[in-house]
Image 1 (cartoon, rainbow, N blue to C red):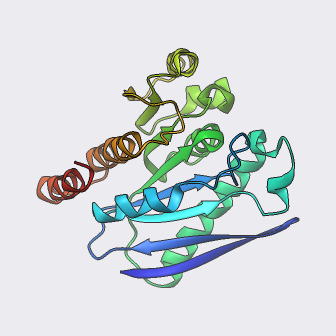
Image 2 (image 1 turned 135 degrees about the horizontal axis):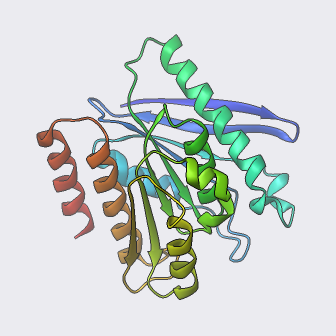
Length: 234
């Protein structure tokens, strides 16, 4: 396992991300979150989620797109242009680091959670040549903007808790504007925070399956990763 850090400098301080590259990784998933949840004030579950993806043979980069200072601002979590710009900068930084260190380039997937989901879709639309697949775990994806939704080319999986009927309907309307391959799945017995262990693990399994389908890899390696995660979550 190769672990390293990347840093991005902003006007309000530095952002740091953790890059983990398992041996023979099939692809790299960038997991973006935006500080603590503004309602519950609980930290992101990004690292625990990333650990499950790594167990299934995927490299991960987890990054908080807000500084500690910004996390106290009341509306900054909804600033889609700001979050998208920082994720774009992070993507460029990762690609430079891979090139500078002579590492093998991997197919890249984006994974957004809650407030970062619309920003992730914007980045996928702007950098479609770099992005192989996208997963959105909750969040109002329509906030990405109609022009960006219509420009998307990477396959998109949207995961929503079945208890959040409003978000299910909102996601369905947004995906009607998308012309690429999409899939909307509801996670049983969950709202869109996926807070329960069962919902959290189910969202991880669906995410790994989606990335495995759309990252170039042998069927054997993809199935091995899914088998491993199945043993973890059941």
